[in-house]
Image (cartoon, rainbow, N blue to C red; front, side, top):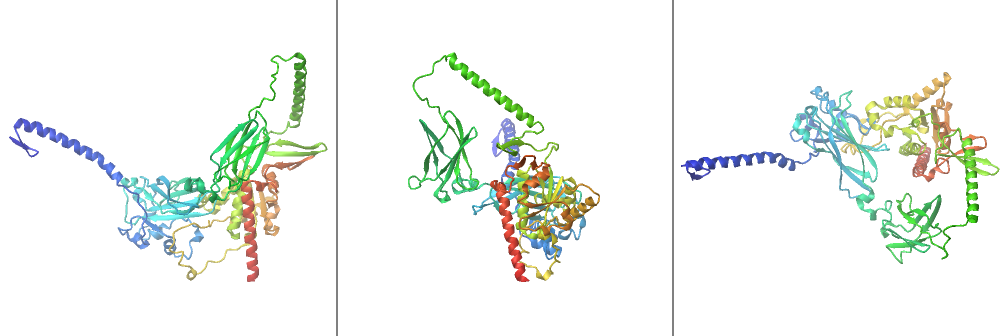
Length: 618
């Protein structure tokens, strides 16, 4: 007799029973061991930043595991009155924050983070978005990892937001911690429907180390994605369109915008075979508040039309639909199946004569355009002759395989409105003038890595053309820094938020002026360099050394600038070159052209206000 599992058994029963019970126990143990990582993963949560003092981080307190560092902490650690002189997203001062007792803590190499993701969080403001960035640390160098820096920049803009997070000096992570997920603080007030670049940097960052950051480009949600189509005036479009044809009458019915959007008029545009049919639509909401019907007239029978309908608003989203106009048989007498020879022969001769005339015209046109490359919808050459205006389509010279590279330099001392006008100019040139634009505001990460002077020197060497936007700020001289007692404590406790990019190209403009002077003295070609002023500036704002190069007044001389960049003559015997949407009166028809004109107007108003303020102060 024996006891197994609390039961009294015989020897045979004891051996068989206990063996089976031990097998069951072993299987249960293995299942528990396999399930334990799954339970641990389910219970795992991301690590969020803590509020802790810089002294706690330096002393290695256990409560300071993953801490946010504010702009005020950096200011006090550096002992400077203002950290803005280094830009709003400067490399963190490792020695001042952590390495005074042990400088080697800031000299190790750490690999870039992995799995950078962007998550949208609740934002009560319907006009903006808020995101949180998360990531995992890399296995490589994790023992020496001291923290992270997260930066967010709007593509095509100068605003940068930065957040700095540090571990306490006594914390040392192990390779198993590479599965941890760390998060940033929320980045609020992001414009809807905009593109941003987020960069997560592993700290410390030794010199000559290129694998310390991971970047990700993302787009914020559109108004329709966040709030629904019925709440967005700019994104709204008719979702339901129905077309009915009875005889020659074509009726189109569509759903109206909700009353809260304030949309009262619409338009319809149908086109086929080069013919357009435009209709203004003003529904009577007192009859029907949800739908409206209108007639399509003057459409050709047997033709397929592509139609668009949208709210009569700037840059409204258009709903596209197709209309097939059926051929209506007129008269009941059918044509004979076999036409007579007397009917066919004159028709055949007429068709043959038309074909001969067309071939002769095409041959003549081909001989006239023998030296031109045909490229539709690029440029229109209008020749004024006695018989009328004749248009020919020409293309850009093909001696360059890539678009010309243009570096734009400017002064940032004339205020944010002037900088915005420069950015809008760069966007217009890149979108509609077949040119690759280089602007420091669009490449702030490379500027921060290389340094402002090194970046500008490299761009000056690699660019085909250099355009200097001259303004009153070129004669500005930097003011001495304010004493420490004048600083405000209101900003000291705030985080590293959006602020203007401190890098400026003023010194690069001085270098360009010296290059122009040397090239002139040597008798070299100066076509690489150009100077331009906006309409609110004066020709006296152009520095003396830059008056040797071609000057332009923008936006009046956009066509001349295009001619300079592409080597296309604007005038020829008996005609002149008209470039679509780049003329002084036509560029505002484009969205980017209208934005450029508006930015220049705002900068002009700001300049006049500054002038009045200076006159009153004097």
